[in-house]
Length: 306
Image (cartoon, rainbow, N blue to C red; front, side):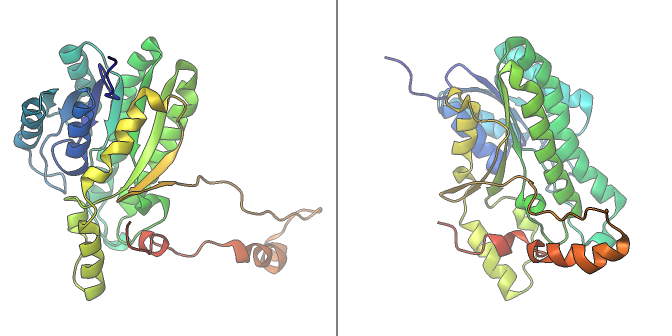
């Protein structure tokens, strides 16, 4: 009888897989038959320190359940260590079929108080890390003419949030990276998609809870378990998703959203061309009704998760 496991025989890398969403993805991928590289240097939420325990504990859990996994402790934030994550999959399992770019840190601050280090370190882990790991895997995927990338974005970038210019810039950059990979590698049957998760994690745990409204918001997020994010990631890594590429999905408890991508809303035209004065007098007033408000993620997703 044919296996019903969606990832049977596949080799998958999950970065940041020691805790939270990454852990749940690694566990589900293993249950679905994949051999998993559990990558996590075991840093704190802000990127400091290191520990082998988180990755090792996930590997042990997978093995206890009868699955196959190896731990990897390299950082994604530098090119050579990131390439060693890909090498680990080849050395351990002889192949690589999917990459989940989930690793991340947070260094939140209101923009005028954000340090250069806080901006650059978050960009390095999220955006550069997604590039480094994907770039190392891309040549393998091209040669075998198959492979799937799943990158993690956020509504902080897709919509907006306070105090997260570094995180938002990185996460929206990842959307552009994913779409470019999807376009460039479609000819080699390589897919690339983004997932924007709503789930409680250590990173979300850094949200301030000073006011009653903030406490209530965090309490609602705490109900959204990271295990709710894993199924769509496993699907996107599977052969059942062979025709799904270049898309952005958001997952919120039992809700899955297909997110929009930037397209023209409306246009204005003037036969003789524009001057700053005519733009002010006629152009902007014509466009203003279609302006986006300064929305935050919570303004758009303003109902309780289902």
